Length: 261
Figure 1 (tube, helix red, strand yellow):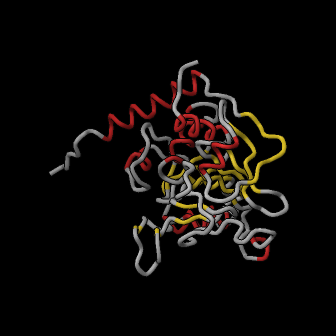
Figure 2 (cartoon, rainbow, N blue to C red):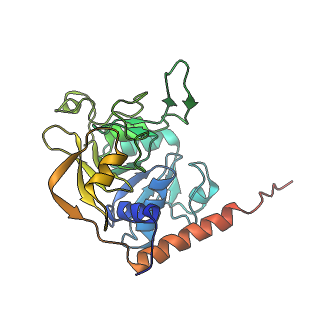
Figure 3 (cartoon, rainbow, N blue to C red):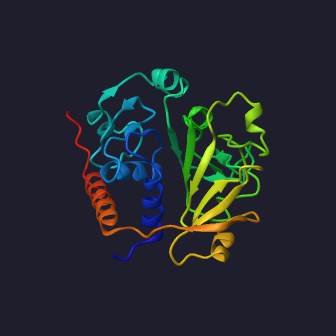
């Protein structure tokens, strides 16, 4: 088996969470890499939907944004953006919403709006996009995010996308019909919500990983499951597929843009 990086292992672990035939609302970045890796490996019939209105898209390279022409060119169909949210997402037709974020707290609430006070932030981020609606209406939400104390925080600077709110069943008392964040994949392990409190709990470690390293990367006292799972290392096929996808993406994005004037 080839050597691999933590980022590669995280992306592969995230892709394994998806299944063939799954209808997945995809976020840009790491979620897009994981979803397309799944499509190119064990889940060829996965249905990828991007916020711009592309349904069943099969990009050869990873998109730069939801507006990347690669998505429309390779989609089964393209529909108006309001229809994506009304007829697909809010109607309960999305199995998994796959999201990233700048910050996440212990109950799976996400921030992609600002770092620091909202009125005078240190950093202004891209913002909500479709994430609040995805988090509210997808049957379940997966999050993929590198673990650092700056990203896994005790308290969000701003709540962009509610997860389990304050936990302990609080989400169930809202109008959110989706199941909430069921899986958080990081580069130090996998977290799942506790059935009772909904607090994110370490449930799986990578080969060679330790509970101490995971706790050091999380900004709150991390709960650990009694029976930790062991995540299988990447196969040579998974690594080759991911690296080929990334190589095609780098080559495509390094080309100059030629406007047809």
